[in-house]
Image 1 (tube, rainbow, N blue to C red):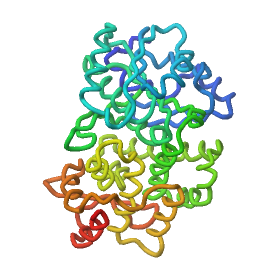
Image 2 (image 1 turned 30 degrees about the vertical axis):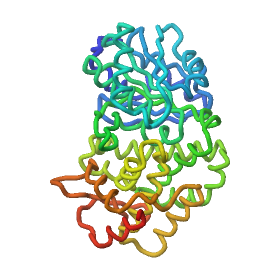
Image 3 (image 1 turned 30 degrees about the horizontal axis):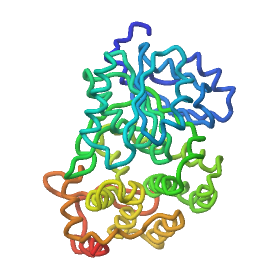
Image 4 (image 1 turned 60 degrees about the vertical axis):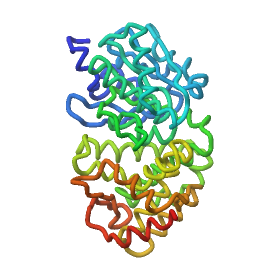
Length: 382
């Protein structure tokens, strides 16, 4: 590995290795997006059928050993296929329980115990195979174990492919708030096999579309219009439409992360709808609503709090509704929701901040909002 320190390897391998470029150039279905973070840069590789040996993951596994972290739903479908991308490596695996309710420190400890049990050291690579919960827990374990080991993301849900697998946010939930415990920890590569979406339940696909719609709403009005025109194809699982939606979403997130890796400024825009959405998840109990469902309702609430022109707010609500997503919060109570929002990570100096819209495709973060209007928005939860 050219003398690179094992402890440094979690920061990523940079752009695709030169010896792979020719191979990928001959595979027209492969799309590659680089997350530009200097020596911690890494590629997002998108294509159909990449699991099963079509993409060589071995250059991103720093030593001979790896631990594949999956869950009881995804592992029976894709674990053996992923192993074919790692021929010659020593592979251990662990299946976590499935669901947001298990995104806890108890599950994290289960994973850390597994790393100790297999004798993992600093040249072991943790590979996340699954959705956002698996990726977040596996990434946090990789960041924590021996203060950092190799990490690879292989997301299998739409939401993970367009959002949680990219950008290095890892962590677990706390009983008092979502994602309160975690670390920024970049993978060495994100490998997206779009064919995994063929086994994704319809509800999970719709939840993932919430995050796709978010990108258009905050950063690309033209992409939002494309989503309006192609939402039926996306819901039908059209491969070409999904590939384009994934690629554009990853491009937008990669650009924002490259500019603001640790959410000091622009990256906070990616939380559009999340202040309300995380409160919904917390108040209902994690897993009652899927993350994307809560974010969908949260985006409508954030748009209502915004001062945006014309029919932009109505267009956002209409697209989410057409995607089969909720556009109003559950009846959990305005005061209960407001209390939960007080634990939002965008709170500074005990002041709640929101991501709002100036118009579709243009978002901003502010603590300057109409408190009376906020109360009216929250009353939708009464």
